[in-house]
Image (tube, rainbow, N blue to C red; front, side):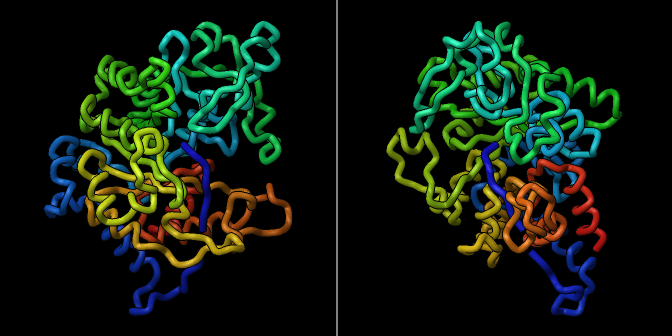
Length: 400
């Protein structure tokens, strides 16, 4: 998943005299009802719900707790991201869903979990002299990028590498775990999911993402077909399967809609940006167009949710402080879509200015205040690097 962060502050009593707990529970109920808007015959959602199901007693995605806490790349606030150490910790902390993982292919066609195909910043590849000649510059979604790329390695070669902390300047404590875990394959993640479900006696959910699908398709390494094949093999390609699939490229989700029955989510970056597949096909629409009612209705014709950056839910002013929420939550619910915005992180540097504390950018700010403000908008869940904080914040919110 991409990058972003967000937060605010309510009164102890609501204007109508309800205490905050009652008001929030009512709002939560409305959010859940809104997410099930398709049942009420709202536009664009009926077809998607027929195919993908609304969950309910069948244990589908709508049976997840609200707001859903999604462990962003695992528990990446505490361990190097996209490792079994990170995934396991997120689960141990109580995350409802673990984002395992961002999927990129190897040279021999296996799907592995890395934030980006460039692995110089998330593995120890630079310390391997045998791979020195693999360092190269490629154009990734229009941006020249120098490093080592998963598609230039076989799976066996990647398995000789070890994961390292991606942002050591912000999270020096995570560097303690550098070198401890290898790069997981998506197939290993599915086995881990089954093992943990059995061990815990409750269904473990995962939330993989197709990364740069247009880029990889041009290389003859189509992600969607590979992902669908692995899911089918494990019997996890159904409407109630505990696997939600996401992508920043709408056409990737449209392709998956024809291949699998899983719940599907379109990720949305900054309002003034265009998905890369739109750039390559000449589609003039921006994210700002996609978050309008018409754009949301279009998304709801093939997907069940959106994953907007938090700034699309509550924009920030020039100083980085939160302003007034947009109508996105209500508009998306009206279209029958759920919203899982990204990404909440505890450190000051990632929080809205009005929730930072002290002068150290890497110290924790008022993350609870930020969570409270975001939850109050009626979002259905949130990606967080700190699942433990998110779960406590949800408890506060639901219980008032």
